[in-house]
Amino acid sequence: MSLRPRSGEHVPPLTAQIARASNPGGTTAIWVRDRLDGLWRDEDFVDWYPRDGRPGLSPAQLATVCVLQFLLGLSDRQTAEAVRCRIDFKYAMAMELDDPGFHHSVLADFRDRLRRRLIWGAG
Picture 1 (cartoon, rainbow, N blue to C red):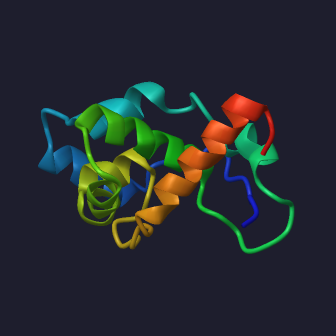
Picture 2 (picture 1 turned 90 degrees about the vertical axis):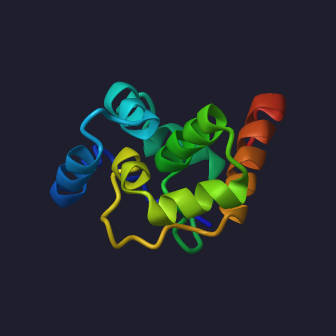
């Protein structure tokens, strides 16, 4: 998998409108997006991925969803399902409402990349 950086991703307008309308008091996912947006960008992870191959998922989005997973105490399967089904998760990840999400195994792969980076300083 390779990385094709996506900088400055904005929440699609319809996703934002529906997320706010259906959750006027907000949710943890909305709070995370509103307060942590811009904390990390795909470019921050460019050394973690090879330069060629099929494009991978946005590591900035995966970092965001890992924070949500931790805060909400979700398993990888529950997290992937939330990304697929919950409007507030789509808002947090700046996804279109019809985005199908990803397979739960992507989260373990991302954490392995993070672990290798932290322990060995290499991708």
